[in-house]
Length: 262
Length: 242
Image (cartoon, rainbow over all chains, first blue to last red; front, top):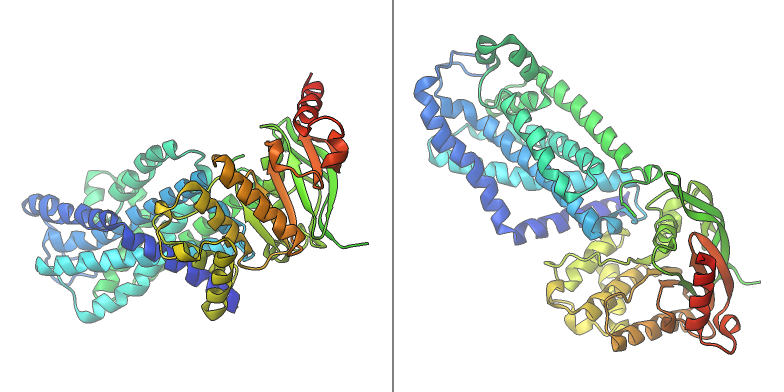
């Protein structure tokens, strides 16, 4: 077990060092949701009326509604960024170093996933801190309860990215995945609009949003930020995590013989 | 009879209908330097990917230091040091940070890692560069660093896949000499893949791989005899290819 923890610690340490040395990545991860919060949410504030739905106990402004969704956006982009770096690592060869370690491959992949998740959590808390400066803050317990939700969400979205990286043969193909995964996942979720609002437009859209694991990740976090527990969202996130992680381990199985190219 | 460092039995691998390795078998005794010579596309990289378990063998068996890779993959990988054809370094991390990462992947940390890394760096005359970013190193130093890295966990078998690609003649010679020393002085079993005949020494065990088949398995000086190895290699691979 000690050997496994040492390997995990090495992977987390490497990802942290890489993250610290890539300041541009950190700034970009903050600018993206802040633009949504300051520009997009401000514009929609007047147009959208939000009724009282759990976990809210009073009428809220659109900026308050959108913050958990933007936290999800940070983690979604981070998961895909990690996936992109895996494809890059594979093309550049450094993936071989990881996969020829004597530790179990599933453990190595999980450690990589956890490292990416921790990096994404730092980004989310930095975003929440800046949101607080704009007057959108939560109780101290809310920030605390958000942590386990962020861990689960980060792992789930990272596992999806990991699986996608095992199916992508070339770096050039990654842009397509961004368009076909990130945008539909984000827009067809409860990140920007609640389900009842979607239902007003189309019940089909509402059903797609309700089926989207990202919606449940956002709801899990939304409830946690208000010190509440959303069991349904938790089950969805955990089941999605198990499915995506299983698919990733399958994707990186050496018997498939396709992951490294020739 | 000395123990086998590396044993490959009836190994085959296909990419779809294309045969990359065709039922090859060979053995390398402990502490021997074995050169694997083959033109581009001969199957060398496929063989290396199978040896270090990036792929699972479709047919046949590999044993590292007496351990069957299919049955004990983790133990076998722990006894293997690998230098890949393409660099596998984090350019924005320092030499020591890169080596720490590798040591951790092998379950080595703390004081043990520090000592092992320092020893490996000294052995390759890289100690004074440990705090430099890899991006600042030239190609020869990066390669030396990768060899140093492959030795940190004290493997018994060292696999190198065309480790001198892109290096100047002097650096190539230094690295070739050093790795030969690792076999003769430190008792490491070395498998060195190359397509450059001047990296093969007369007393080296030599395998020639061509189009997925081993077409020659002997001591280098016995293969070439009165002619140069370059001429013999060219003739063998051309006639086989005709």
